[in-house]
Length: 298
Image 1 (cartoon, one colour):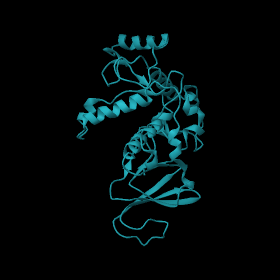
Image 2 (tube, rainbow, N blue to C red):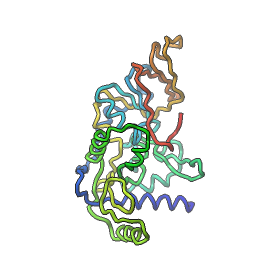
Image 3 (cartoon, one colour):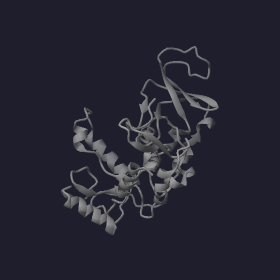
Image 4 (cartoon, rainbow, N blue to C red):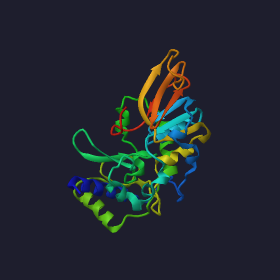
């Protein structure tokens, strides 16, 4: 294994084991995996050839799942995910499979997709419902407030706080204490000048801290996919193994074949060999493309 790959794995393992007792915020306290969202999940080839939705979320990952759940409270939502269901990939559901996921050869179907960043660094990203939250080290921390203030977005900080609490109460756990070697690394960081020692903190701070984990006390992973359960599952559909080739914007009636949606709004072709699917946004609301800068681009 290449040296930088070893360092990458060690880095993730270190951050996974950062969980400790929460002193103020409420954390999740259940240990059972919640697959309720599977009621809304289908293979893309099993979806109707033509449907209408208020919103289509491209990418069922760490950003796409909570976005879809929130929108589904009052709207019909379709999530298009190129990967499969977590329950078909046992390694993504527990800490025991963490390293195995990263070591798998990428055959185009594995939950961890290998890629190289623009600056030449080898890395992996999630290719499974729940995205990279299903393959990473499970370290949880709130965002940097300075980043939010300089982002140019007029954030409703009360809504942001409620969103934090929702995530933390649903999928973030404490690990009660650090192992001896973990404590040694923490103390070494402080001694090396990574200060101050902030103890347990969920918020983003300068220095060394211990934070929450999406692994529960028995090693089960509770990824972003479980946030789908917080939505209205009757309004939510998730299509797996769905690859979006293009987005077609249209404000006039279409003369395309009937497999393409006619009328105003936004439409897209969704390819899933050997069948072609067409989906349509019912109103001229918005396309929501979720994901980080390392995610696949259309």
